[in-house]
Image 1 (cartoon, one colour):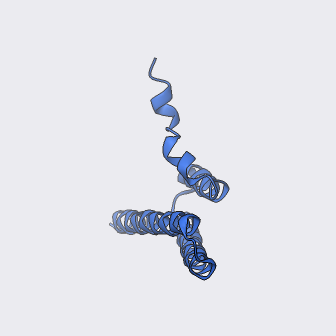
Image 2: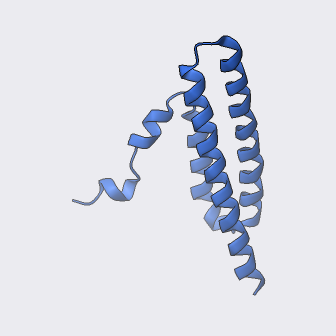
Image 3: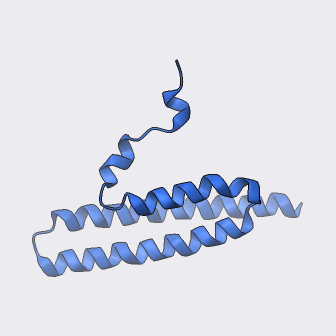
Length: 102
């Protein structure tokens, strides 16, 4: 019973993380388009704030998951940090299982 509750909790945490990543991406995109330097800085600070929240939540998720499940989330978290500047490229990358359909 505890395992099921833990899975539900982790699932909700993942959903929140996803929502915050989207919000961070939105702020980054708005900052790139902002003409006013002060507005751009405010948007970048908001994006950084959501980035910190995502990192904290991801650490909680990783600590609650089984060790065998951690490999997939760690690669996702590191990919998210690497692609901050090229967030448009993230949308064009498809998972491996889709490219190996032949």
